[in-house]
Length: 280
Image (cartoon, rainbow, N blue to C red; front, side):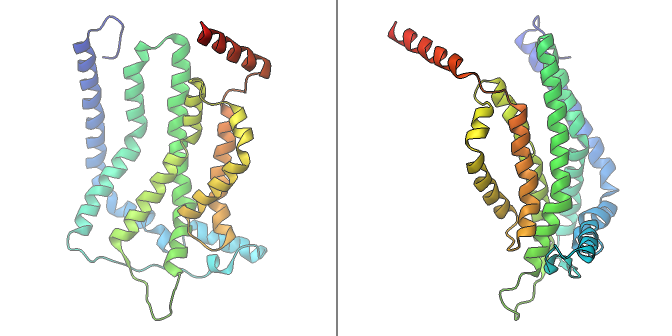
């Protein structure tokens, strides 16, 4: 059941109820199914950036052996010993990871349910645009999570864990601290990668065009550099640029996807028409 013009208010609520029921059922199924695989995923995927054989570290070491363009701190042997200081942390972590995994795997189906609910209420020309928006947003979210896992979190972990204010202090990383940063950085990058989607929606509503991106590009570079520095508080330029470049590409992609700026003569005509209407 989905939205239709001949449906009453209560019919709409009934359609929404069944959409929510199917969505939560899918999450529940993936939660139960993923619960058994979480220990394996935790060892092979979640904990992988804490070991020296992580694919990013091996890739950077290989590049550094061919050309000394990467700081030595990034290619040194690296290993993180994680400790648990709370009795129930591992049990609740097992449950929370199962839920996050279920949401991540079920995300395309949840998007499909939303699409199926709103699709009948749209015109044919609107359906094409909304279908592309849902698909594009889903792909960009997964791409952002992948960048967060492959680049942002490993480099951030490596810098913060090896940073020393004094040689008398020994770093010990708790399980909760590791997981909080792991989930926050990965899903933060997933949300950041929705920037082109937000730009497209604002452009369709008439609030944004390419003129904005051309006028504020220099300001954006400074702002995005600041965002990259906040995400990865590293002192070396390589780590900073590894985060800044993907975010800046998102800015340029957003500029490409929005509508072109209207000609100046059309803009002046619209302003004059508004002044005439105001005088009337």
